[in-house]
Length: 391
Image 1 (tube, rainbow, N blue to C red):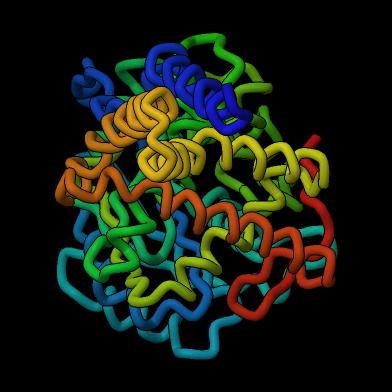
Image 2 (cartoon, one colour):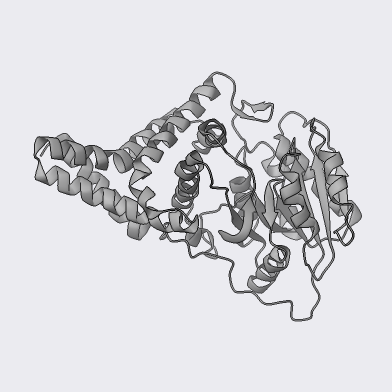
């Protein structure tokens, strides 16, 4: 058989393994675990920490949902204005001037010192403010572009209490409206779940650890044991690093898809989506050129070989090559359908996954190029050129 046929056979074997042996990553039924209200009726105090840098465009769609949380216990919002130039802090105060809103404190930490990423420096400041002003048992760490259903905090706390969990995280449903959002966003979550299968993360004592930074409920005691955020202060991929630190500290973690926690940030074109992925892709590979080469080769074999084999087999009249390529492509597309349905998109987009995978390959290579040009992970005017240091 030809080299392409052997490569495609390898791709089909890989998809058989991914289908059955990678924690059923493609299923979308991992939602908040069973939960009941506290047996004594006493709901713990919660501090909601929101790092925000130049977020005036999205705050009107997100912050009111936090201020209006229907939570039976005490809750307070701490928004950390991280050097914004668009009036983020003032807008937050104005949005909180509504009767019945949760208390809001707006703080500013100043520029992060060397060795800190901006977001984690802001989170540190928010947690410090909360500790000084409340006796919160939990922190809800949530991004400024995340809108929560009114019962979101109550459900998160109930899940943590019922399951004895130290960290409960939900992967917010990202916005999918534009053409490029349809092409890139569902695949982003699909690839994340493939890399960090939720079922593996949620097994007690499991080795896989990850969280979704847009929505993380963290027990204050577990944060102290893990030394966060100080112990992960350089982490560009802060959510995964946070989960790993909590697990190393003996904490139990849980991650799943959200039903009513949504990102309101728009990505109208390819360029902002490209930046979202490329800013951390090479950090995910630990800035290792060998891992980069292996990842590119692996993605090419798994995602790109099947459609190439179908076309080549059809042109050359090679029935074996065509059949093997079509089988691998079919399994690939089939595993993508549940994620498309979760995002309320047509399953007809599933066969286009190889095209999206090619985009991700290019984004990953671009991430490495920017790193070696000294630009590192760039976000809102800050660049982190050094590799992330996680103990």
